[in-house]
Amino acid sequence: MVGIFITLEEPTEPMGQKAIGAGFHEPENLPGNRYPKVQILAIEQLLDGVQQALRQPGTIEQEQQSD
Image (tube, rainbow, N blue to C red; front, side, top):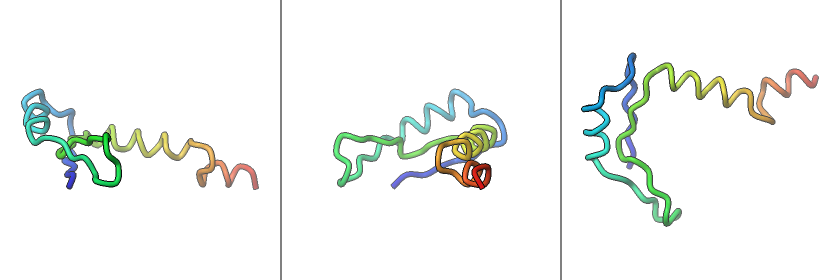
């Protein structure tokens, strides 16, 4: 299981160390792929990721432009 902690500001170094200390999750159906059990994201990073995803090929934004 993986948890995501969302902050308003960039996470501090001690926060990052605590998250790393929680260990990693390796899904049974994806051997060799490891994901941090605790992930810390600043809201700005989260929103930037959403904006980038909307610019990817095949997204709603591009489908609307092609109409």
